[in-house]
Each structure stands twice: as C-alpha cells, then as structure tokens.
Image 1 (tube, rainbow, N blue to C red):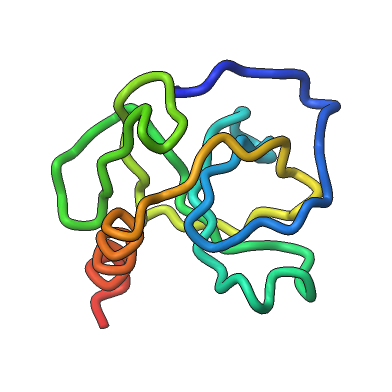
Image 2 (image 1 turned 180 degrees about the horizontal axis):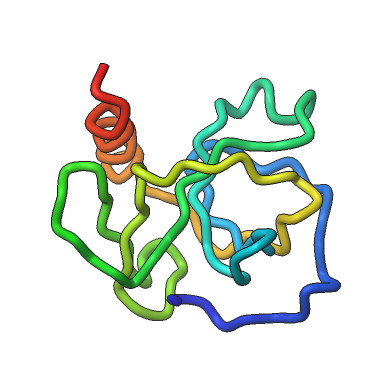
Length: 117
C-alpha cells in the first residue's frame, strides 16, 4: 500500500472528517489506507464511518480516484468506491492525509458511478 504499516494495537477513537485519508485496521483484511466519506457533521454520533479502501491495484475505471503523496501516500494508489466499507472508528489508527477540494469532487463523482444513481 501507500503507507508504512504500524502495530495493530494502535487504534484511536478520533473523529475523522469527510475526505480525510486514514490508516485503518480492517478486520479480515490488512492495515490499509481508507478515504472517509461519511459527512463530517454526523461522524461524532456514529461508531463507524463509510470508507473507500485505498489500493495500489489500479483498474482505470470511473469508480476509482487516483491518490498520491499529495494525499499522504508513499506510492501512487486509488480509492476504490466499488468496495465501500463500514469501518469502526476504533479501527482507525491515524490520519495520513486529506483530499484536496478537487479530489473530493472526484470522489463524489466516483461514488455516483459506483452506486449508479
């Protein structure tokens, strides 16, 4: 992935904001970056956030958003909106970056493509 891995014991109950890139310990998967898509005003009232997992497997499709070191990643990757997940806030380890306004617009468009509505 695009971020150095860290211990699975290091989780936080921080309040992430929409468009932030976090390192998350995903059950049944591995520690990987995610892009938080839950609207910021409601996050503090929820136990989980809607997130797009980040992967280095690029498929060049409309439901992906290209990410790079500008978003806090070590190598070029994509946020995959076809595989949205609910991620418990207790599984968030640390914030590694944030999407620019332009990237957030791309993320919303990719989400529209992914759910086809």
